[in-house]
Image (cartoon, rainbow, N blue to C red; front, side, top):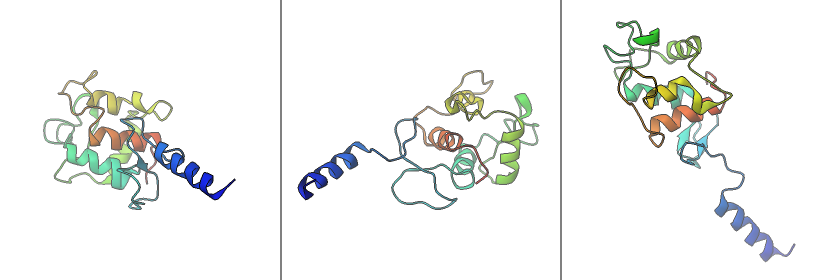
Amino acid sequence: MAPRTALALLALIAALGIGSTACSGGGQPIDTGAPGDDDDDDAFDATFQTGAFLALQEENCGSDGCHSAASQGGAGNLQLPDAAGTMTATLAYTELDTELVLNTGSPAASSLLTKGLGTGHGGSVQWATSDDTYVSVLAWITSGAQFN
């Protein structure tokens, strides 16, 4: 292949995003590297500790009266992180794993995500599929929902 043709092919591959990892939630690229390892080619971290956990913490679903330890997790007893940082990443992961709210076979069908969208949730709608929290949590579940 002539050098000029090879360069044109590489430019086309880069333009189309072939070979890059993309999240189904809006087509945003995600980071599937080690925790805290942002390789600067993406917008979302697919790890738990530096991605999904921090996104859930910022969402503040674990505030008093909702999914907090004081309210015993609300409906279904699911406890979630709050903005005050009263729940550790380890405890949050254990809670999510224990309450069976994750579906790695069909990540978008995970009740953690669908309830946040307002489907079957006693509280209010927490996010849309384009929101950073939804995309971060979806990326983490899609990558296997590991404690990383």
